[in-house]
Length: 586
Image 1: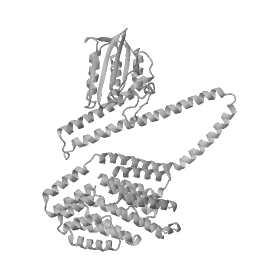
Image 2: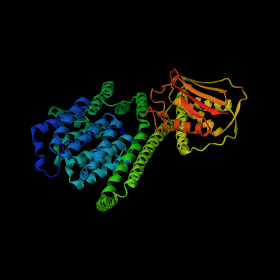
Image 3: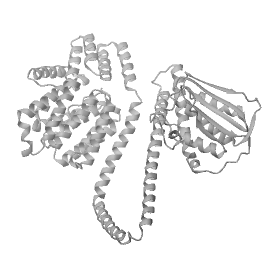
Image 4: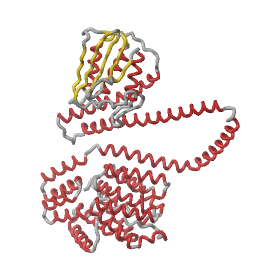
């Protein structure tokens, strides 16, 4: 039987038939519309991306000009389904999210079933059959309420695919008959595709006699100008049944998608009794489908489901929102009257309030940006760790020792990233502190620097060397705060590691005139001219794609000042890279 990766999705609602024929639907009988629809349908069934997207954009523009939003968004769904057939899951997910947002913004409640339908498709592709089944039944319920019964046949076909993935052939046949019953009354042109699917079902059940009869009927339909998304697979299985095993295998590899082709070839070799080849292709199929993208995609689906829950909650709260809005308008009018009364006597006070208000807005924006940034920065390494943990824990995935070491190092680097982000967040309050720190620790400088370098060497690129250069005696010590000094050196070293992929990082220490000078220089990307002071501002990241919150250097400067010193970017450093210099009193 077919598993969840097998995509037999047909054009979502390609015939666009609605219950009552309205005057606005008269265009559907015009040759122009019929030609556009048929061109799109044939390109879809042939799996031709260039032709499909060309024709469907023209059809969407035509439907939008007709002001038929149901038909327009139906074609938007067809784009998503086509991408799923092409195994472009991420692109399909992006289009699905955009569709859901547009339906919510335009408050097209009758068309919300489309969002559920697309989510069901993506759940099905991800292997979450139970959630896919629930979504498709929810689509049928909403379509029944909205009066779209004539368009329910494709949804029953989606449920057929789910039941086939669950090896429930009896339920699949029942649903197939239901789809045929609806199509025969409302959209006869769908029957050819449904019967093609039924023919495939006969093959899976081993009823070769009925399969051959269905194939002959399919060939007769092709001669009459019909097409089916299942046609390529019918040709593959028919060639295999005729005894042309290798020809059928070659056809499957050429015409079907990777996972679909591997699974089809496995079945062909099984029926031919070539068990070794069947086993080899089953392994190839398992390797192709066992991916951490399923985990990421399932998490993304939860976000879409949450948006739908919010939509339902917003509808219930709409009445209370209107009342609240009227009250807010009334209060605003009263406030304006009061402000007009006191404006001449409270100008100075109002200016102060305005400055405070602007400051509050800026603080709110900064807080929102901070929350959004840290959420993104933490979620990304967590997803990486989660994905690699899935790979390490799966007995079905065979990996070499080198791959295992590389995975472990990657997980360690991302764990270090999360730890650094948490530390920066916890130390955020120190940016506001201007009080001098207690310098009561006798710190062994060389040991401290070497410990920091050792910790960061594990996180650094394999093409990066780290060295410590000092002219100070081996027993050199200074009285300061060990915690703050270690944090300063660690922050500058971490900054150098993040911006240096190749070359070296060098830490130098000297002493003289009652001052300790510590410099960290690298051969990385460097600091553009004119950005020397800006890099010490909060939340500033010259490269938005680099990890971090933009708090490291501001925190480093604050800690240096609390120890009675300073940190600056050495503008005389010729590069490549950058050099930061810390001076602290001895």
